[in-house]
View (tube, rainbow, N blue to C red):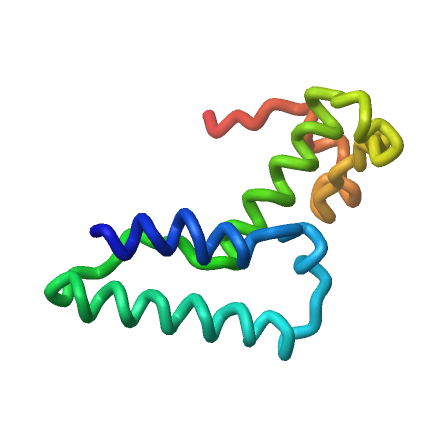
Length: 112
């Protein structure tokens, strides 16, 4: 348990630094980060009597960080991120069957 806390506080913190910048990185660069993560998980698992550590993947952590930024921009409208705000774009959804026969939607079906 102590190694897991140490990993979360020291190592993962360094791996997640500027995680939004890592979002577009090449796979070979991300592989270096994953290599460190996998090694730390193996060390924690070996020292904690084979118990699986409760660690999320680095990709999951990056995805959560991205979603947090999108939420702050679009919903919360944080002032220093307003240059990133995009107007909402509603796309009409049409189903092929509805587009071909719109009259069927207006007439109730009766089986009697």
